[in-house]
Length: 131
Length: 393
Ligand SMILES: Cc1ncc(COP(=O)(O)O)c(C=O)c1O
Ligand code: FES
Image (cartoon, rainbow over the protein chains, first blue to last red):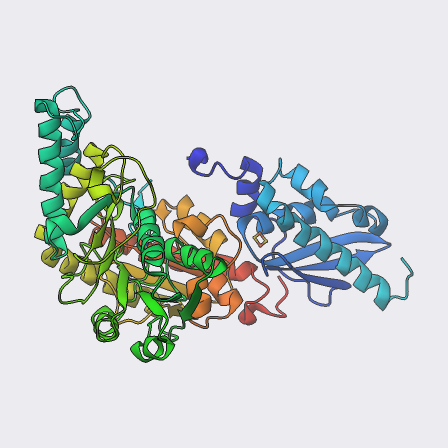
């Protein structure tokens, strides 16, 4: 039945069906929330930082399957990275890791990447670290 | 995996009886052009005429008032453009509603950019047009009122007879898009006071690309196309004979079975509505519960987004939609739900399920088993789910 949805790659469907790192982190070191100007959907990312490294990361998404899959993929990519490395992850990287997204769904990967960047900023602001 | 098709308002499969009626007209037996004088042509002409009688009967019209088209969209275009062009000397104001199908809405907007004034009357939160609002919108310039009979997204039945009567009293032409009511509600163009009516074949188990516009005798319309003398010059072009024959047979069967089939589907619909409302929290039935066609259910689930819900249902074999099929590629929430005053994010989480011939009680049981789990799973992921806020995982 994998042909059922020709719109999305297998990877997207995998991450949509069994998303990784769903949830919240209580007393997170940084939280970032982004609402899409395109569709109004929302993603929130929580990070826990230790020694400048993303020790743990979780997300919550109100959005389409591409947005959920992107959030899941992004959290996998960011986990264990330094903040500087994590800040370099772009929406294009997320989309590529998912074996691509349909053109009208590219903005969905942007939600996840932007929310992560905001979470890192939030952490840096709280800890008076200049980025 | 079990497959449950719940998108009959988008389209339906051609019934075996309909296919059987169509096949000879695709093959050597009866492939003729209805305009030809020899036997092949005469047979095709006879079939087109018989189909016209069947379609006319379903809506209480005379056969000569039926004009075949390539479907509902063309019939809507022909109604609006045809009347606008024929009556523009009399006035340049058109009234329609905010919840019309895009075939009417976009055509009205086009006319609005080309010298006509268009009023889009609002609807109540339950998705109903109010006769008073139509009345207030009428001016001396009004030449046409177009209000759909049953809305395709929320299934609401509009007060067509009353609006028709109002139009008649004021000498205004009245069109109704009845694509979603033909074969589902008893229709009689006399009783409903309509001058023009749109019907489509593929919503009633006929082939796609086939439909008609009913035009009351005496109403003028300018054609969209020029060419031959077919359809009394109002719709030139060699007739799509198999599609017309299929439409006719589908209309005949729909008329014969309407009472019992709609009673059956109404029961299934109510089981689905009551089942979901009792099993899921924070869910709303979009559209009036009473003034509602027997086949339509439309739920708004708070905190979740429609596409992920539809895809999750699809993975369980359930085919539903988030509104009209033509807009599912777009990111904007339904104009119908927005017109009903439903907030943006709630409109985003709405799902339409439309019932039909192939649905059984077991299908509904299956949906009631699967849907609550899916909603729960997606809500657990949503930042908008208040219940989950602040709980560490
Ligand atoms: C209310 C309404 N009008 C018009 C149409 C268009 O009909 P067709 O698909 O035959 O062009 C539809 C079909 O989606 C409809 O639901
Ligand atoms: S459509 Fe909104 S995130 Fe994909």
